[in-house]
Image (cartoon, rainbow, N blue to C red):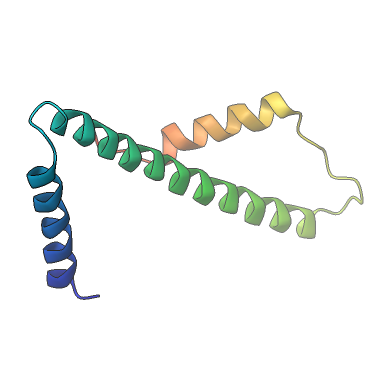
Length: 94
């Protein structure tokens, strides 16, 4: 899909929603769409972080000379995950 087609498509959806929602429902629908955007952004970032962690872990295991590489406990994995998000991914503010 070309960028102009995408813009037209999104604009048509916005117009449809605004024409079919009451004035009091429109802010709720808008908030729901924003939450959807934020949730999808979180999912995309989480998938990328996990992909990078898996790739890094595989590379580490392949280059590791020992047969039993050290394992990480769940708290350490979570802490590393959160640090990666805050250190490596800038989430635009609203």
